[in-house]
Length: 603
Ligand code: SF4
Image 1 (cartoon, rainbow, N blue to C red):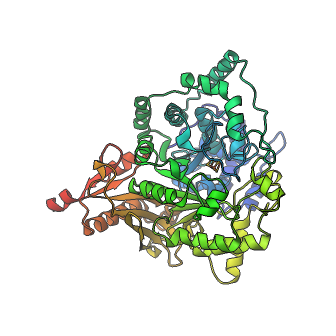
Image 2: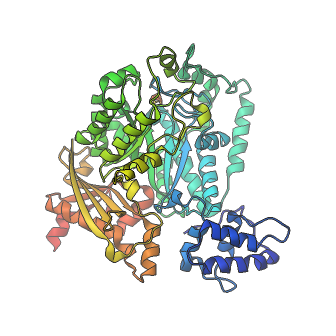
Image 3: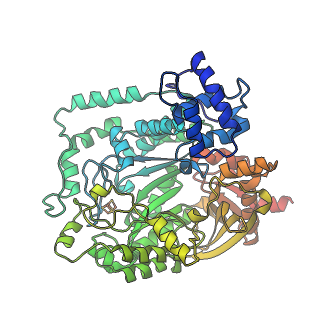
């Protein structure tokens, strides 16, 4: 369910009369290409001149559906899909909202990492997401509300949100800040869903604070990677000292307040169906994974960067491969989805060593991430790597070297992993030297295709907006070992192995992290590519889509029972708790679970 945000204007009678025929054409069109839509926009211009924008049409469709002979929104969900900008953004049925924490010291001293002191560590001020964060003063409420508004105006769903919190090392921010940041993001979800806009109040509070602290220096200092008289932490410490001193006053929420926000989210119009933070391996401990779980997190982005101790040391990562092994094991034992970051072309590596390193990511049972971002090292002026480039001890790979490495990576990625990025989308103006092509994934995929190959990773196989018939889908099960579990990757696929839904089931072999997980197998992720299936099955007159996630869960329960587990736990997000309750799961402290033993005894 979506509601209209309060700033949306009512259409007047004259506008309705103009837009109705255009909407009728859009509804009636068989497969509306962007070119065809553009022709329709030209055929029905605004009387005062110019064309109706897509956002105008989206707004008009929401207002006028169900009137003047138009079908209701629920009858024709595909109409919004046709009008939506960048439809791939929410093609998985879940809309990602990425927000940034404010600048803050980072425990890492990685020589490749940008040191833009206007940003949280590793981000650059002219990246689009970073610009949005800065325009919103890094405030979680402003960022979340404003992003939801943009999605609403561009026709994306706002009912299922994956909240992705980016910036530096999450675990290094003060706890009160973390609790407050998530609580305020949830407040924005709830307000937006109810049509309430409190951004003016937040801006007024920020302005009042600035007036109270006129001595707080503005952020205009920069770090020069060649000189490094002062590093990021020193500059940020000085520049933001005023901010940090006052932070406990405004940037404070209690755990009780956060848990109340979690509960409110369970039945909210904008539900959080996934919560992601990013951190470093050496900041993961037993206590930390459980604390992060208590915050409501379901996925952790973690910088692995290299599986070679010498390369990690040369790049001053500040942790070794053993720390990565420990961290991934702990995260998996707690049921988190693991989204790793890995970097080729680091100082001290070579293309051949990178390809071997990538192989270890999946050959070694200690790693095997669920998702992966590949970020080839780029040279940024504020990074200490500038010195290694100037003395000739580091250079960026040539186009062909990078292509060789990335095609090898695509080839080696198994079906259970999702390659979310194959290159980091850094503005070319920030890259001092080296690759500036942001479509390198496409280039590498074309290279594979020339040899008759294709990527097997999840992202390359997602059905996205494609319609599929329910009868062509089949269930496929893949098993692989990790350091602490046997993993079962259940996927619903087409004959071409394109993926319509999947579930990650963990059968732990280690002792449980908490009493709550004793004798429990664990569902770590359920993902149904909703929009495409709804369309396909509606067209085929088949209502089975509603059961696809449930069928995967039932299969997981059967497998868990066969493997001897008494319970099946799930690492649910706040917004999916109700979904699991309706499928027989009960609430625990940090997880929800089904009692398989009791069910078996009752039958
Ligand atoms: S830990 Fe991450 S954010 Fe911190 S310096 Fe290293 S790469 Fe940058």
